[in-house]
Length: 300
Image (tube, rainbow, N blue to C red):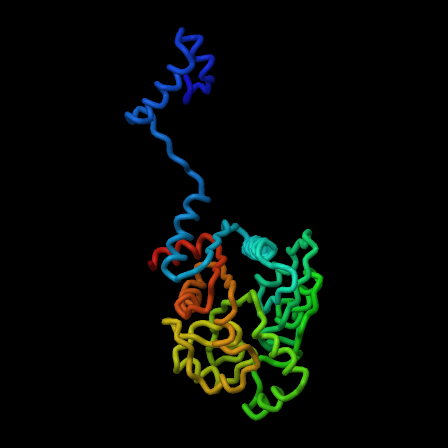
């Protein structure tokens, strides 16, 4: 009557000529003896267990799993919304937010709803990677987040990868770059990008800022992932490559000193690069879709 017909305990008591307390006791007894079994079929609980296992394995503060959508762009938007919600919950007035590149970070910048009216400054953690349609590049994103968070955006319109170490050293002496990089030690939260590394020698597939020689060198050191311009092998070990001397980005030691470092990724094809970045201990927070989360969990 209670579980199958949906009757209330009071109605059952009247029909059975028993007290309501007796009905309640019998219902409890039916669960204790196994006559009635209750299961909770809710993906949020499944996600919670998976998130806990991933967090424990990689020593993360938080793992957030977002339901995968049939359309990839919808999943990107949902992950971006989750990043925006996490930021709004954790940022405080006067904080500094560090920005890298990426499609997820773009959607996060669009989803920010600063109803608390807080003021947070932003800083560009890496040089630019594109000069067309730069909405997902670090330069524009730094400005977008600053606007949404009522803050000042500290930007440096320079390439991520320069032609030589000498040129990089010269730029580092320029006040425009110096003033931005000095802000890195004050970053409270960093939005880290996780990208698979396309190092095929064909210019059609190679990352636009990498030369053929760069691509060959990264292949030789078995780089599989990149974040904030730094390269890692499948064990999460930073790749010792000559191109590191030409990089305009926050160094790894500085990045690891940031209290909260949020990494995001989508799709089962991102398993290897995400594992690489997790093993590098570059992140404190991971936000992914459920497909990738279950694949990560299966590797534990």
